[in-house]
Structure formats: structure tokens, C-alpha cells
Image (cartoon, rainbow, N blue to C red):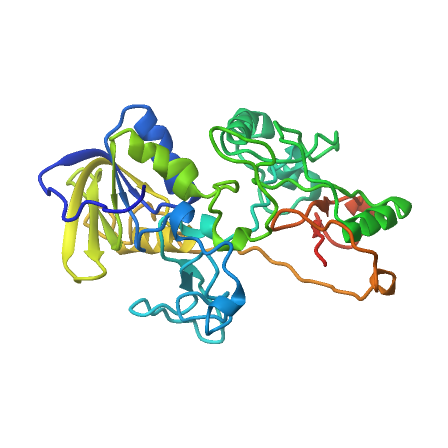
Length: 380
């Protein structure tokens, strides 16, 4: 479905839209724009990937001489779906003095949607107006009501399991039935209830019933390998494959974008990119350019795109492009539960992730830190 991408391009053609990046943002842009009738070109720095064909979801460790150990392009194990890593050949980066920043990048169709836990939570009303609550940062210029209809459309398109729990900052949605808690999750849930800690069904974009022509999850627990049955969400087959079927999407792989070109008036005219296999430089003409290459890659492209109109980089009149980026932070705590020793045989089936989690439940006015966190539960 996702092989045989056309190369080289017909350079004289002008596309309606050129999208850089085929992950969550780029895939959704391609899906919606082609459905609306636009002629779209999608540039992906990595290679082809089709989870319904390329996944090793059911391969046993003994079937590999490496027993699943990591490889240079699969640092999380050779069976992992995602091709990428912190150190990519031909893509060096430098660190500011005194820092030890590690930039993890995916290089494949679908990007990092091939490598995530598929936890699909909504921002709540308080998240958009946090400064009004604690005085820190800035409020968003929009509110939850502005984006709620789009959250609903996402739920219906990709399929998300969960419950409507009627919690203050934990909006409901259009959910498929959540899988029942496993044995260890039931123990956690029981303890949380006794401690008055909110503990509810997780919300993951893994379908538990047939949905939009996709099969329900059969609980093999190998989501990280890429789902052969297409039961979990990834941009590759939920967004890009339907866009290709319209005949209005041209997908070019091994295409590392390096600059957005502009005309004398400062309007984008297209994207220059490097073919990572031949090192040849190419240019695609487009009336509109969408940058969806992750926070760091998009910032790099904007800073690279210097011209007389934009001497400090495109869209960087503020000088803030590439600054104030943040990452997902977390920690873990593990424990050994004697009660689980020599347990009677029981069903531990489930998705490749948590079935329950704890959204933030405390009142920060009584605490010495702002806002909060959530707790994801794992075990076995």
C-alpha cells in the first residue's frame, strides 16, 4: 500500500500544498487536504513503512540471532516498529556548552506515531486558562470549547477507548469500550479507591471493536512492533493510506527538507530538500507549505529559511523560534508485591499499554507546587 513512491518529481509541477513530515500532524493534514480536493505532496525524511506488512508483531525472540537486542537504527530493540534514534548517521547536532540534550528522531513514514504509548488525553478547560488559576505562564488565546468539536472528530476517526468519567478537568468524548483491568491493575484500583485517589479507565487510541474498516485489537500486547491488524492508531495506515487512495497525494520518502523558499513578497513558494540516498538537491513548487516535522525539526527549517525578507529565519521576527521548547518529563516507581507470587492462572490479556490511570486529583491550593501530573500503571 505504501511502497513504490514516485521519484524523481516533475519539477515544473506546482502542488496546492507541500507538507513536510508524515507523522501525526503531517498525516492529518494530508488526510484532510486530499479529502477536500487539494493536490498534495508529502516529504518524509525517512524510508517507506507499512505496519500491515513490515511489522514483526508475532515474531518470537528465538527467531533472531540477536534475540531482539537493539540495533543502530532501532535503539529500543530490533523488533520495535520505529526506525530512528538519538544519533543518526549523517544527521549530527551540537549541544550548547554545559548541556547534554538528546534529540530523538524517527525516520520512517508515519514518524513518531510508530513509537508512542497511544495515550490520547484531551486538554481540559483549566489547561487553557492556567495563568488565570495560578499566575504562571500565559493563558491560551482559545478555550476548550473552541477545540472540543475537533477532539470529537478525532475520537470518531481514529478510535479511542475509555469512559466518560464526569471529572472537572477530564472532558468526556466518543469512546470505544475500555478493556477490563488486569489482575495487578485491579489491585491498584482497589488501593486507589481506599485512598480516595481518582483512578479510571485509560484512554488509548487502540480500537476494542471494529472501527472504520479496521479490526479490533486481539490483545497480543505487541503495539510497539507496529500493528499488523491496524488496530492501533498510526499515521501510516489510518491517515496516509486513505489519502493515497484519493489519487491526490504524492508521497516522497528519503527527502530531507532543508529550506522553505519564498518569493520577493515573502510568500512561500515551495521546499528545497535533499535526497538522502543520492545527496541530490531537489525543489518542489507549492502554493502553500505546511511544516509538520516535529517541534525541533520545524524550528530548524524555519531558522534555515533565511532571505532578504527574513534575515533571521522564516516566521522569526520575535527571535523566539527554537526557544522555550519543552519535553515530556516523567519518572517511575516500581515495587514487588508478595501477594502476586504463585498466583492462580488467570487471563492477563490486554493492549500494549495501561488499562487504568490516575488523572490529577489533588487541590493545588493546598500544595507547594503548581498544576500536577498523572500516573500510568504497568506491571505483570
